[in-house]
Image (cartoon, rainbow, N blue to C red; front, side):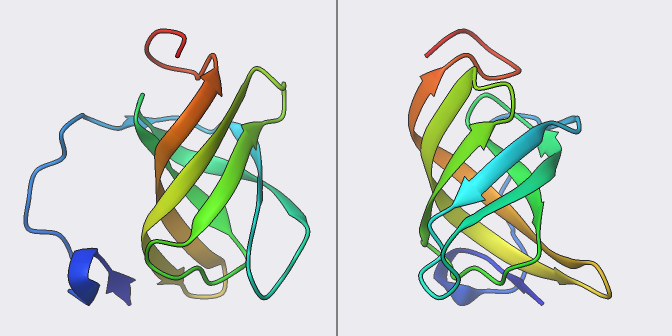
Length: 109
């Protein structure tokens, strides 16, 4: 199930920015029920956010910390959606709130 803004299924508005398919190694943390750091990767990225594979179910508007494995980028982020992927866990769309460092696209923040 895909949860978007207001709990609606799917999205009916265009993205402000096109996502680029790209696997970037990241660590995410801040889950309220499952503490600790999860090492995973992105499916696609933009200068404002990313789609990240995860083993944890996240709630809409949860805040998490995301950091690249290289250590060049770190951000406080907001969960925009969480989608179940059969036998693979979940994918979450995250929007960067407080980015620091150089992300893989765009200028340094």
